[in-house]
Length: 177
Image 1 (cartoon, helix red, strand yellow):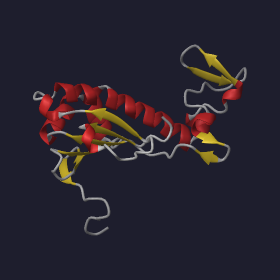
Image 2 (image 1 turned 120 degrees about the vertical axis):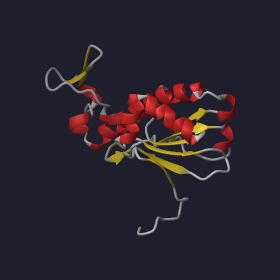
Image 3 (image 1 turned 90 degrees about the vertical axis):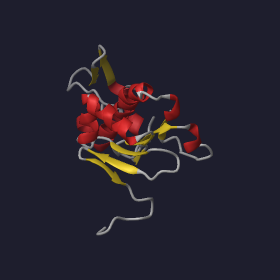
């Protein structure tokens, strides 16, 4: 799980033959087999949300180990199911241990917010987001970046609380950049 950066929801053909370097959560989805969008809604409100939890656990434990991480696990004392103490006293820690995010001075995880790519009709994705408060909070507050396209041949669009905007292909920049 260390190193996670994105989640792709779409047909397996999107990633076949591509080395994703163990950084991407994959969820197979075929829009043509889900005319009412119920399967996509389940994917977006369960596995996608869990991927975000995992991503942010690593993100915060990496950016500030003292505040959000759990310190070295060699002296952890578990406190029920809610966290750990370092040694016999100290602050309750709920993050990941130092050994989960680094080796020596080398970080194992590059802290970044989760990017999600979905291949499904944009109106279907938008209506799912509008019906689910947890998704609105994650996407509208930029905890997750969502990029989607209607089909395999279509252009990519970036979601924001104001709607969908064209997303330039890799290597291209928007005017003014």
